Amino acid sequence: MFELSADHEEFRSVVRDFARTRIAPHAAEWDRKHEFPVDVVRAMGELGLFGLTAPEEYGGAGGGLTSLCVAIEEIGRVDQSMGITLEAAVGLGITPILSYGSDEQKARWLPDLIAGRALAAFGLTEPGAGSDAGATATRATLDGDEWVVDGAKQFITNSGTELTSCVTITARTGERPGGGAEISAIIVPAGTPGFIVEPAYDKLGWHASDTHPLTFDGARVPAGNLLGERGQGFGQFLATLDDGRIAIAALAVGCIQAMLDASLPYAQERTSFGVPIGAKQAVAFQIADLHVMAQAARLLTYRAAALRDAGAPAEQVKQAAASAKLYATESAVTATRIATQVHGGYGFMEEYPVARFYRDAKILEIGEGTSEIQRLVLARGLGLPVQA
Image (cartoon, rainbow, N blue to C red; front, side, top):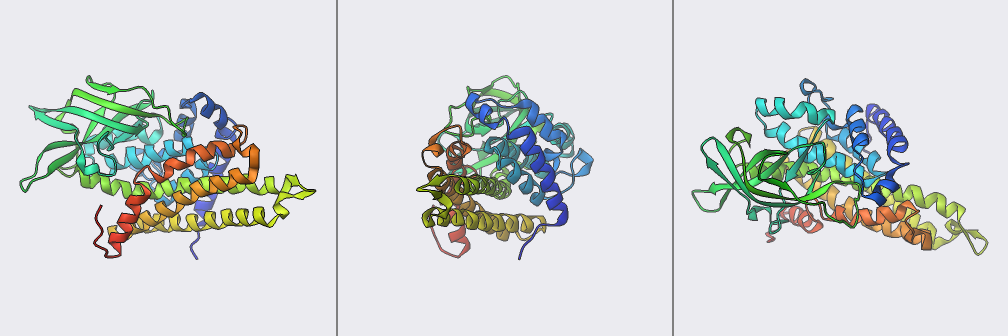
């Protein structure tokens, strides 16, 4: 049986207290107003949540992915918007710089990102390149000692806040000798002329999370902003997504647990035909299903995180990440449907949190690799010659 350490459980209690006191009382209002709560994000930084996976030399805790998953689960248990803000800030913003950045790049960007004084974004998806990320059309041309970037990115989290300091993007920087695009990763600082943050999306859910399309029109950045080796950007981002998928699974676990938290007491208190609805087998079985989904998703997620922290082979981590992401996110969507059904007409009302979680859940099956992509990864890992 897999269990978290005592230190992890103690840390969970700290984050849970923060989530319940600083986030939960305001989550519905932020959702209603589509408000990104900058002060709370800064407070998350002061608590050390953005530095959980970073080394101490940059102000981090020197911990692992398991600690980050604990934090994301607990934050996501009260507000999925703040959960994805944390997940994207660390898994997609900090991780590429931490993993592939030069000493100079790390010294420049990481201290503020880790402290929560700034946020970084991850620009992979494009209007014509979603699951097929290799179809990247954004181009970066080397002109003297500068990269000139032209193109567009879409659905980019944490890209337009007052805290956003940079966006790391993938771009075509040439052609490979054997054919095909050479894709590199480049850091584009916020405020760069020609880097345009378009108006925020009007989304189905995650209303308190910041998400924008981005346009690059002759945006010039120093040649030294190349992240890692030229031509290795696509591989770097795919490796980053393996960690991100585990973190998204943790966010889904938080969603499932929230639905159990809401449905169990409601079924005990709400009466119908003279008895609590939880006494009805149909309702009781649904809540039992929520319990099983929460336990199974949690075990898959933390097993994947433990493998990553233990330095397991990359392919083993990839398979574990895909399994966790697929099961946890699809279960989260099912859990919100069940919880809404248990609440009946009240579940359709915004005054009950299940309505917000219902709207928030669907994107979990899409972001950081769709369910179809996870099945593709798993099928190939089983040795099947499946085509995308």
